[in-house]
Structure formats: structure tokens, C-alpha cells
Image (cartoon, rainbow, N blue to C red; front, side):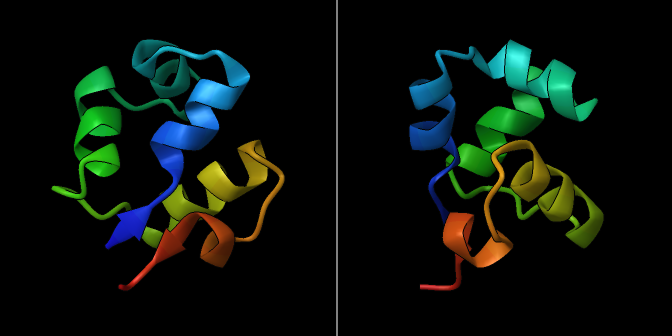
Amino acid sequence: MENRLKELRAEKGWSQAALGDELNISRQSVNAIEKGRYDPSLPLAFKIARLFEMKIEEIFSDN
């Protein structure tokens, strides 16, 4: 699954660790999601979308 997480995180000036803290996940998990090695659970995807005030499909795509 492709995503815009790295781009959105950079716009906020957040490190992977800072984003992980906001989401209660590890920096390594943030890195894995950004690189497409790990697809977040639906509850985590909703949490990410709420944090960035976006719809899930604006962040994640199945391309």
C-alpha cells in the first residue's frame, strides 16, 4: 500500500519518533509504514487520518 505519511510528517516538521509518540507506536513502525513494508491496522489508519485531519484515502492508496 502506498502512502503520503513521510510527506505529511515532514510538512509538520515531526521526526519519526515524534509521530510515533503521537500515535503510541514505535519509530520503527512509523518507518515501516512510510516505506510500505507494513500496512497499519484500520484503527491505526483512522488515528493517523484524524491526526492529520484528512480522510484515510487521502493518505493511503492501494496503487
